[in-house]
Image 1 (cartoon, rainbow, N blue to C red):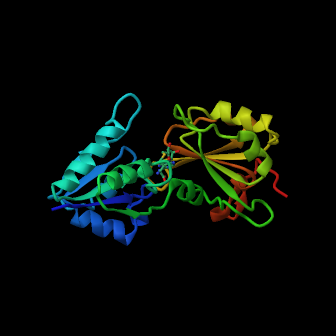
Image 2 (spheres, rainbow, N blue to C red):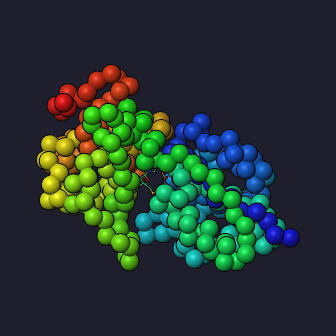
Length: 246
Ligand code: SAH
């Protein structure tokens, strides 16, 4: 008997931001394979009888992607209902596409359950609308941490586009990202917000200008929001005082 694999988005942290489908699949799962950034409260929604496998990729450790794929295939072939639980959305920098392809090649059906990505949840938690009339008509979600072999990010094009830039995995490279955007024509006084551990009790929000980003104290995991909207905090009905937004 062939089991079932669901690639499930676990959302940004707050378990109430999980989809109903994700909660149901977790409750029914025989095996839950989860990543480092999945919130413990979300994992706790799984059946206590399930088997839990931590395949988190932390710097310098973690389970290799190939091994994760092999494990998923083996468990499905053993007839298990597997939930492959990822932080945020499984298809936003979660390598969910690679796992779905590996399963398809092995002839195993896989269901994809989208989750609320931190690219959207983190700005929302800081009161930052990604698009806002008169300020930003677009947003681009980009990785700040380029893996070997991946296409380079065209920072100059993003600087020219004029919309909001949302950077995931960008904390370590933030100085270089700021330089690349400013070299591409982004004004030095462009607002930036860094939201760490968004939607959890450890959430921290830092704000600065792009030319100050290198010095902004921020720890990973955090989402960087760059552009005029980063000066807003609509929850507080305020424009953060440091910025002049027309
Ligand atoms: N699939 C995930 C992203 C994986 S890449 C998603 O859709 O959210 C991991 C990056 O996501 C981190 O480096 C960080 O930039 C961001 N991230 C994940 N969880 C976060 C959180 N709770 N708060 C802020 N950023 C977060």
